Image 1 (cartoon, helix red, strand yellow):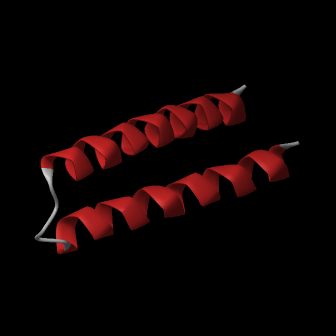
Image 2 (image 1 turned 90 degrees about the horizontal axis):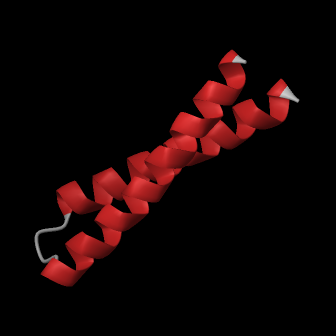
Length: 57
């Protein structure tokens, strides 16, 4: 079961890095874009936290 959690955690860490890189390198983001990607980051960070807790237990 830990293998699946590790794989899923790695996936979300990659997605998090992709969004951060996109936002940091794009200089034409609108307010709506920033809100949208901020919401996506929030969801991803919550999933990462839940997966890290699952690995500890």
